[in-house]
Amino acid sequence: MEQIAFSYNEIHQTVAELAARITSSDYDPEVIVAIGTGGYIPARIIKTFLKLPIYTVGISLYLEDHTTLPSPRKIQWIDEVEQKLEGKRILLVDEVDDSRTTLEYCIRELLAHSPAALSVAVLHNKNKEKRGVIPAEVAHYWAGQELPDAWIKYPWDAVDIVQHDQAADAKAVPADA
Amino acid sequence: MEQIAFSYNEIHQTVAELAARITSSDYDPEVIVAIGTGGYIPARIIKTFLKLPIYTVGISLYLEDHTTLPSPRKIQWIDEVEQKLEGKRILLVDEVDDSRTTLEYCIRELLAHSPAALSVAVLHNKNKEKRGVIPAEVAHYWAGQELPDAWIKYPWDAVDIVQHDQAADAKAVPADA
Image (cartoon, rainbow over all chains, first blue to last red; front, side, top):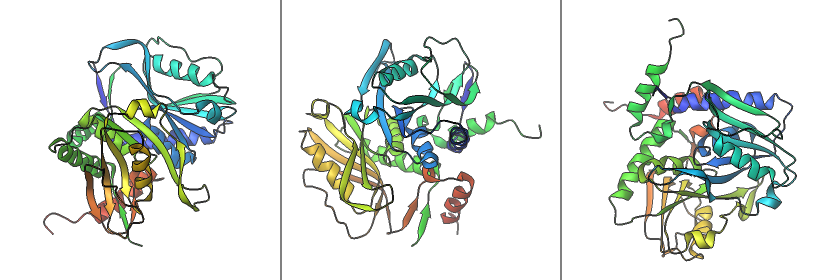
């Protein structure tokens, strides 16, 4: 499978552009909900631009042996979520929209707690057949970048960040190529 | 006040070194607890090396107008924290040990839930007079780097990451200077 590596600064720029699109939209979020652990870093960066509090939810689609679970498992859910999100305009943040299963699961769980509105922002959307759907109640869906169905290598997963950046650089198409 | 800027890759390397020190110690953590929102990024990176689940707690010492609160306020606390952390060896992660107030607050709250053990890892410790203390029950305290009492500029707070990196580069002392 094709691999696409992104450096931290590329991720930061993608978040900055995403935040600009959100800010210039008609959606005015009040709280960020980060899907852990992939959404922690994008959510923390987007906070710099949107200046909103972050709540986190921990979700896993995999067991420790990398077996895929039939449905996502809650690692951590929001304490007093009902009170904190009820009537709020949520921005749900994750790193990637892959099969869409985790995203749909989180969206439905959050919608059950009566937010005023819910929109979704992901760094990357993989253009592939999806197993989950974005429910009609979702006000906006923003993806920082549309990508092919590749193996996305995030900088925070790098054991060797120098080697990782070489892979990220190799991907870049020169502007005057 | 002196400013010290760090690039993402410098942070990543500091976490890698911190993780190596933790791995080679006699402490064998089972869960990471990230103090939000500063600890989200260091915790997510350390997970790459330690391969442990992350729980997050959201704490704020400041109001939205930047007024300092007399004691930290819980933004989000761990759902079912008692069951999930009881009997576990915790690694508590934050980005910076500044006045030590937030850290002491989190440590005491977590210790109240009967973990088997608790150790602390921060990216940076500021060498200054501390208002909080590290309780004696804490097994280990690791700081990735010891810093003077400066204004630390983290990459995730950068509105302009290119400008930020110039400041981070300017700080670097050439190896053959």
